[in-house]
Amino acid sequence: MFLLSVTLLYFLPSIIGHKKRDFTGIFILNLLLGWTVIGWIIAMIWACAAGEQQPVYAIAGPARYCTRCGAMTPGAHFCPTCARPL
Ligand SMILES: [Zn+2]
Image (cartoon, rainbow, N blue to C red; front, side, top):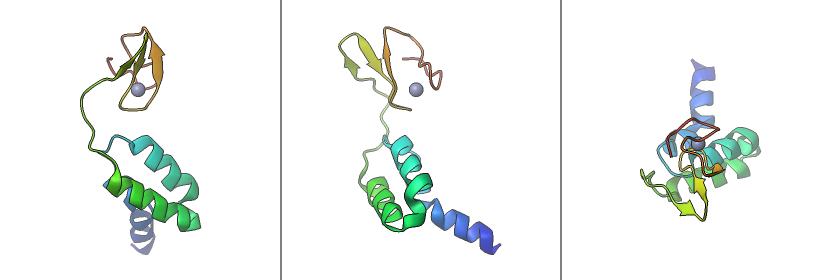
């Protein structure tokens, strides 16, 4: 029970940011630097400040940008990283 509480607290920034556009970045920062406290605070601020996820796809030149995982894919109809249709 204690371990579960600590784990939930540790991943709180990721939980808050799970519907945000920058979720991948927040999660990686939370996972890798959360134990440094400073990294955890930055992840927490980022999660609170990040914009809501929007079902829109920004097209930068011939490459398509996946809003779910942030991968840039030139001319593909599906994201090679998370298989999301672009
Ligand atoms: Zn993707």
